[in-house]
Amino acid sequence: MANFGPKDIKKLRELTDAGMMDCKKALAANDGDMDKAVEWLRDQGIGAAAKKASKTAAEGAIGIKVDSAKAVIVEINSQTDFVAQNEKFIDLMSEVVDHTFNNILVDADAIAASEIGGKPFNEYLAGHIAIIGENLVVRRSALINGDDKTAVSGYVHSNGKNGVIIAAECEDADTVAKVTPILREIAMHAAAMAPKSLTYKDLDSNYVEEETKGRIEAIKKENEELERLGKPLKNIPLYVSRAQLTDEVLASAKSDIEAELKAEGKPEKIWDRILPGKLDRFISDNTTLDQEQCLLDQKFVMDDSKSVGEYFNEKSAGKAKITTFTRLEVGEGIEVKEEDFAAEVAKQMA
View 1 (tube, helix red, strand yellow):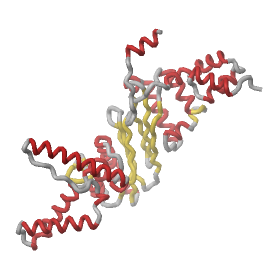
View 2 (cartoon, one colour):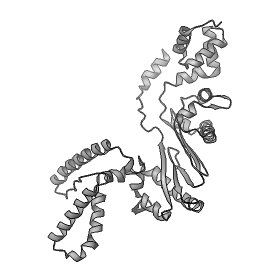
View 3 (cartoon, one colour):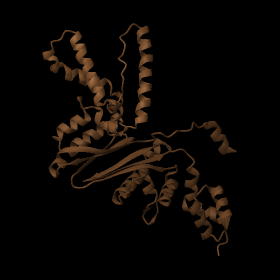
View 4 (cartoon, helix red, strand yellow):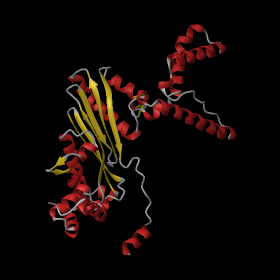
């Protein structure tokens, strides 16, 4: 019979900040002796890791692995950029990426729930935290696992701070071989231009509505300043996304353009040569959200006369379709608490 209970586990957890199961193991290994359990955790590196877990890890690196129709991308955070460039951290990244790839782990939760080298992943990571000396977090991960008609590529920026994996479904194996290098170009574009979604079809309608209001108000305010300076005013759009441009909206825009051409005295027989360009301009002016945030709707950095979607369709001869991508940037969305260095030193000296 164990010489400890839930209260002892709770007390040990409060003393060391170690996980509940680790505290239970420590007490079981030491017949309920609290002091020995604390020492056991320290020897295992778990206590040290737990103390560091309270430190915000917002630096780090992105790692990817791509082979045939499979790819993974992993973000591992550290407290400092210095550690992220350390050889031990780089080795850790390589091991975790390979582990994720080989075991087809779909996300960070799956990684955390896995075993690596015969031990639970949290114990494995705790050992590396103790060795490296900073809190480390496997924060995000994604997997692409396709078939023989899936083209896959990826890219990590030279600083290791952002990366992309991307996939396209193809008609045949020849198309897979043809578009794979094109996907790398688009992965590089995505790393630089930071799209949030694949197409405008993925945008939430409420989000689009809020963005429409916000962008219109922002342009109105900007125009007030431009007017004060005597500069040309910007056009105020009615819409911000292709999702809003229904058949009725486009038909109305076409009628307005025709009325404008008529008022300008343009002969009706040449309207069909002018209308497409003006309608394209209307669509461009009213899809600014898509152009900023949707990969396939962004202007391609290597040829800004085309969108990414147009460029890929042209290069693939219409025989492939980009189906998914994941872009990760180190520390995205993490709020870093400003530390009072003097106060921290005083605390350590007390």
